[in-house]
Amino acid sequence: MYQKRWAGTVSAPGQNVTLHFGFEKPFFGKLKCDVSIPQQHIFELPASECLIRGDSLYLEFSDGMTAKYKARMGNGQIPGKWIQGDHTFPLTLNKSERTLFQLYAEYALHIAEQNALNRKDVDWVKLNKMALRMTEDVTSADQLIPVLQLILQNLRDKHGFVFFNSKSMGYETDDFKNISPALRQAAYGNDKDIVSVRISDSVAYLRIPKFVDSQPGMDKKYNEEIQRQVCVLMDKNVSSWIVDLRLNYGGNMFAMLGGLNKLFGDGKIGSFTDKDGKESGGWIMKGGDFYEQQEQKTSSGIKCNARLKPGKIAILTGPVTASSGEAVAVALRGLNNSKIFGEPTKGFTSSLSGLNVGKGIVLFISTGYYSDGKGRVYNHGVTPDIPIKDGDNFNDILKDKKVTAAIKWITE
Picture 1: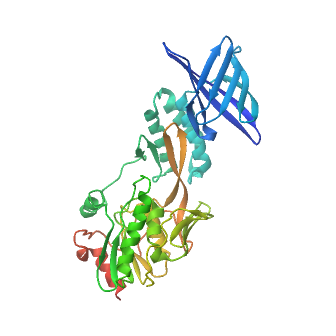
Picture 2: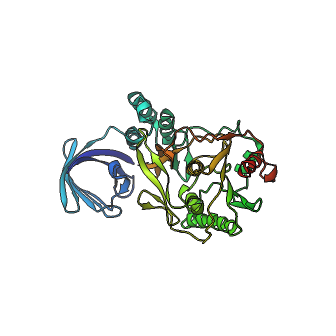
Picture 3: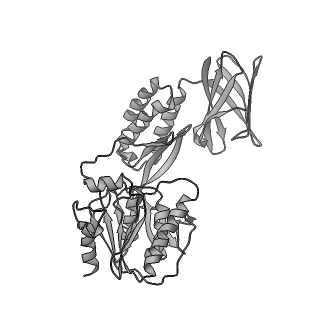
């Protein structure tokens, strides 16, 4: 079996697009062909037809893209025509010196340099040399992961990660040194449920853990369950809240914020902000649903008619609170009647963009920071207003140091 790669560039209106072709001839069987067009997020798309007759080459793509390539084998080149839709473009292929995985690495470096939050702090010439050197002996997609982790490490992007084979991989492992045993056991054990308790006539405790279930419809179910528990307590005349985010280390922030619509009311509750302080996506509550700018992210709406306005809101955070958990903390802190108790959060207060860099490989990089409804930007996590170290007790919350401090502030 032999495998060769060829590349050529199409000059389309407004841009040049490079196409990378792979040709593989098994010992037995037909010639196999594929095309990768990183600029169009196409990777290793197999041709439905791949024929060589004499010096003529014919490729056709009908699944995922409708296109044809007709060419003649030349001396070291393959000149021909790329036909896509109603357009025909001249396309000459030359032997590529890069392997498929070097192509992936090069494309990942390119999009990181163009989009990453900390892109100005990286020596890209040095990083390109290091990364491409690492890819010289790469022969499978999983061997490419360390190269992508190297990019994240140079960006100092602790929130970013590589998603491949249903696994998320950052560039460093969690450090549990600063996490109390009680918090560690609860966060990484079986405490996965939304929990609400009426502490007194007017005060309620609401625990919102992580939510990472990507199955269709589960985000709406999670959203509605938060709403349901809030509504039950509001119907009992609860006005002040302790929102516990200590076990929330990520997931779907839209479902979390949408579920808390009765605490926010309508209006702007925060935003994504770029490194220069320019807003790149407002967080809007409207009719009980969460919007990013004009794009609706939840569809549950308001599920209860409670008219009681929220009183004081205490937010509990800790070193496990991360990503979407931090987004909820940021949004709640922007309210006039709120205060944060506990320990600093993990520092994943950045918006992530998922970018396809190869077949089945997605590189998530930080492209913005969180900011609250008052315009305060959180680029190093969330620092509590009232610092409280340890004292976590999830089995008996009335003996929890952070809960008791929150109750004292609410009832003052």
